Length: 285
Image (cartoon, rainbow, N blue to C red; front, top):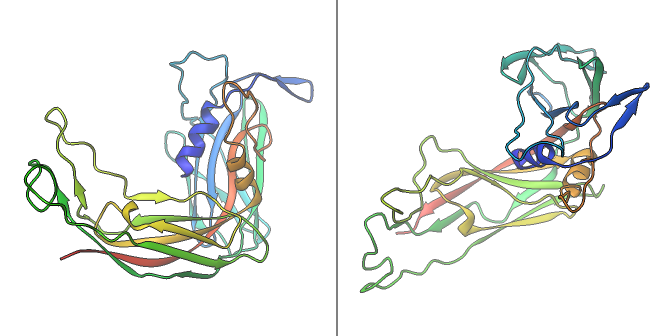
């Protein structure tokens, strides 16, 4: 999910210049940041150039190199991020516990880029009503065969399972659910026939539900593309992430600067917290 929202930020269109201490920030001048901070984890932060609305259709965002990014916490932790690769910065130190606040800052184009976030508490009373479901393996790589559908063959029916997910949400904050295959080499459930002699790319091993303000969500069993174990992850989000999610309706007919809590920049620098349960997707015999 987070890649989708970064892309929206990078491609968002806006027409108004902003003024800071009598210095005009022209379109394309702001760095776009993506960083999600979790308790007990190291920091990973990406920094890219902005694509202004005046750009050619072929324009693309580029990584920003050579930054000196500092993060300081109210727990006394001081971190200088290391550039792992172009535009990607990481820490060797781990962040503290939930409730700790962190400030980030660096210089770019003669301005100070900064942001602050607090690590939220973990989701509470996270439950799933199923820990195992079954799906039918279907291999159409050699065409349709009896028992799998198509001319001359029946079609084995599959019971559609729904995984119901619940948690406590007394503060009415945003949560979202993700499912991630955790097998090292998972077996694909459906192998489609080739197209023009080429097999399509393997499906993603992870998918996300939309953020919700409620205390429940669900996953359709047919959403799972692989057999084996899946991590069902419930994320608790800070309000700045929710504001970004709600602002993703920006289009060429609705020209607006994307919501961001980053001073002199765009993107997201926010704390998240999560809990994980395991679901097993078995092959139906």
